[in-house]
Amino acid sequence: MTFLFSGILLRLVNYQRSIQIKADTLGAALEQLEKCHPQIKSVLRDGSGQVRRAHQVFLNGEQVSKPSLNMSLKETDEVEFITAIAGG
Image (cartoon, rainbow, N blue to C red):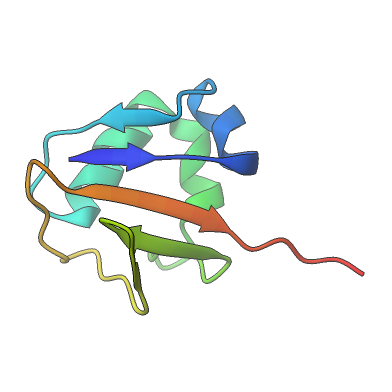
């Protein structure tokens, strides 16, 4: 599967727009990603290990309303994180 990154998340993955990972679930893919880029864990995950609500998750271009770490992934899948920006 492929992770796609943009915006402020790019700096946490050495400005790589896409990263290939071999994993069957979102949780397993995140664990592999975090081994290579440990600084991303505290940004993507909350205290319980779930994806933070500040990030919208897209699977193959479709928004996933409640991403689960058990969500199955195929080799051809693309997962993208879009970070909500707050301010005033």
